[in-house]
Image (cartoon, rainbow, N blue to C red):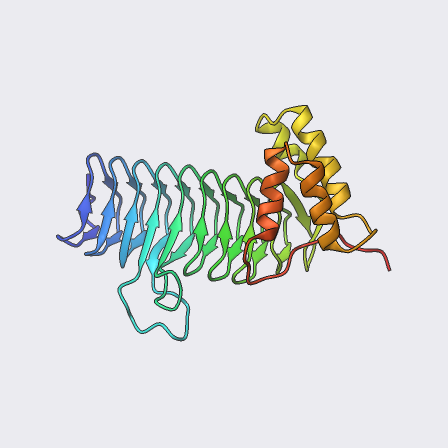
Amino acid sequence: MVHPTAIVDPAAELGEGVHIGPYCIIGANVSLGAGVSVASHVVIEGHTVVGRACVIHPFAVLGGSPQHAGHRGEPTRLVIGSENVIREHVTMHRGTVMGRGVTTVGSQGLFMVGVHIAHDCEVGDHVTMVNNATLGGHVTVEDHVIMGGLSAAHQYIRIGRHAFVGGMAGVNHDVIPFGNVWGNHAHLEGLNLVGLKRRGFSRESINKLRAAYRLLFAEEGTFQERLEDTAVAFAGSPEVKEIIDFIRADSNRPLTTPKREI
């Protein structure tokens, strides 16, 4: 179902049951999965794939050129998963040849008004980004992350699974899985306990995470010593292991840590 005022390139691929509203522009290299609903005044361009049953609200722009001074119009991509809700004025840009060459967004996410996902980002499943939350280029956001309104992530940082980023937080360092960060620049204020409880983590798992957090970010010894001690003391906890592995992984940015009293 394509509204007569919409401009859809004949080369675009439209799945079964796609709905395109008034005054939309759909480019030649766009693929829309089955059941995608595109409201009025939406622009989808470039080499862009949108998975099935996504709902895209007015004035969203998907697949636009990356905001990168080195981009020369190369045919990079944007790939969006299934069952996402993309609200008004959201922008998601394609990748760059200097980066991954593709920006990827997972499935079952909620991207509220004015959200921006820049070039070469990798966004997981079940991610919620509240109004005007912004990702700089090359950011990795893992599954079940919530980013509060007006928050922003610096280029190249990683935000681990189930982390919570508070409203208006400016995040310029990596955020551990299950972490809870606030402020500008952001600092850890503990674990995302509300999210852990809502997602069905057991009391035993949460208690182990809390004990591991206290050990990991204590003031005694060096951070590397505490990291090794935490890995040994909580070797049987998959959640703690996820944090340890996240910290040990290669990264372009430092780690977000708790705020220290001066």
